[in-house]
Image 1 (tube, helix red, strand yellow):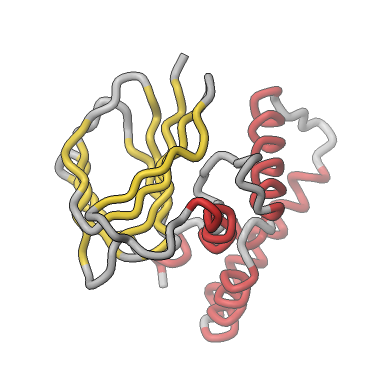
Image 2 (cartoon, rainbow, N blue to C red; image 1 turned 60 degrees about the vertical axis):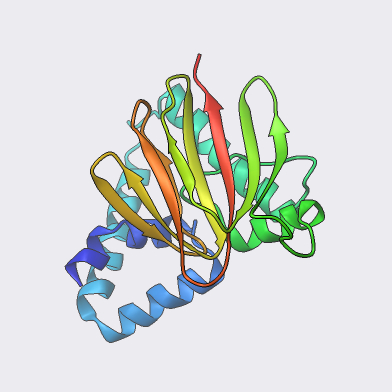
Amino acid sequence: MKEYISSGIIEDFCLGVLNEDENKAVLQKAQEHPEVQHEINSFMLALEQYAADSSFIPTAQLKDATMQLLMNLAAEEEKDIQHLPLLNKHSDYQNWLKIIKPALPESLTEKMFVHELRNDDKVTQLLIWTWIDYPDEVHEDVQESFIILRGRCKCFIEDKVVELEAGGYLEIPMYAHHNVDVIGNEPVLAVVQRLKVA
């Protein structure tokens, strides 16, 4: 239970950024484990005290980050492929499945399907549906992240290994060699995002 509490999900629950299913799962855990309910109560109390401190003035950077997060969540809810939000750890893969549906073929007829969703001076976003592994690469001028929409994969980042399934999100550090292996019995469907670094 310590790992669950330290994962950050309780903070996300209290901040209201989880989807409906995730909220239900946290409430279920809180019913089953008093220590989870205690952490929720403690964090909510800390939030109230934080809000009550009138001397707190958020930095411009914090304001910008908060507004960006809220705009992304709103854009995801709209599910409009012409106005794509940026991926982040709060992205809802089910919303993204609906967003990319117009660009997705009915079936994967080749080993790999790649479709550019967005490419501007800020970001490139690619839809990738693949049976085959993604080869080793390293980025020096973009911050890469991706979300898995279907399937399972194993990601190798330098000496670290991470397994992801639908809903899994991962950020790749710049200058880190990384590759992805498809595992399981279905192809991996993912949205890959590359934020351009000034």
